[in-house]
Amino acid sequence: MKVSVILPIYNGEKTLKITLNSLIAQTFNDFELIACIDGTKDRCKQILLSYKSSFQKMTILENEVNLGLGPTMNRLVANTKGKYIAIAEQDDYYYPDRLQLQVALLDRKADIGLVSGIAEFWNGKKVTSKFPGLLVHKDQYPEGEELFLLNYINQTKIVNSCMMFRKSVHIKYGLYFSQHYPNVPIDWAYFLRFSLVSKIYGLSVILVRLDRRTKRDSVTSKKEIHFKANRELLRSFYYEYPEIISASIYQKALRNQKELELRSKYSSAFYTSILKTLLHNPFQRVPYSVLYSRLIKKIKDANE
Image 1 (cartoon, one colour):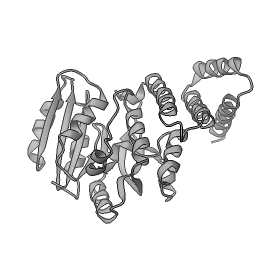
Image 2 (cartoon, helix red, strand yellow; image 1 turned 180 degrees about the horizontal axis):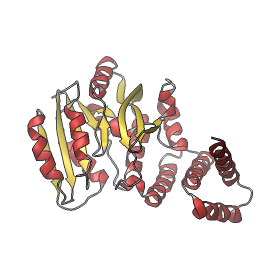
Image 3 (cartoon, rainbow, N blue to C red; image 1 turned 30 degrees about the horizontal axis):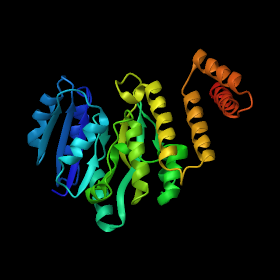
Image 4 (cartoon, rainbow, N blue to C red; image 1 turned 180 degrees about the vertical axis):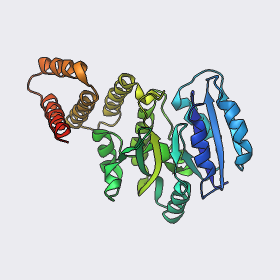
């Protein structure tokens, strides 16, 4: 088959059916589905088996113990047969033309190694935002080191859960999904390395709806783990690519990470973090910028 859709699963029984139904409804159906259950014992395998006849080909892999996202992704890729590999996640909904649009783009543009699109964030009742703004405003990703630095400094501007890439590029350049970072930073690291060996293209079309309900059970909702992994990625890439990442660029990326961490806090935790940051260095601008933004938001909310 032309496309291999890979699906890592970890405690996904509550949302897996939504993802599977959206894949069944794809207008492009020349694909195999390869799922890997990463050491969990919920009902995911039974759910997958109940859907098996709905796909042209489904392969179910199981890790005896939880290995984490990186090793699971590498195992999935190793079992693919398709020319193109598409990523799916257990709690996302894919719009019907997602695969069709991406296959058409890769067929048409031989110099493109990876294609993604726009994601909308859904809180259970409505769409709250769309990402990335660059594609929402119909701009396009830069190339090479420029894209590398854009994603390094400002964090990834590529939607990981709806990317499709050429297997040939992945193999030729020895790319892999790292096991050193939990969840999102794994994709971030992959995009950084990919941008240095091949072009990445963004479709200015909404391809996926991301489930961002507050009570969902997801690694991405565990912010402290996520933030620690982000800081480790920035540090390790600074040492791995010294010819691209200068000391000033590294510090700029760290400031952006710190601002992201401060903006994620609310109530007393927010003000405690601001105070600790200022006591450590009263002359840095990040806490003042975050305080100002929070104040403006409160004034705006009060007037609405």
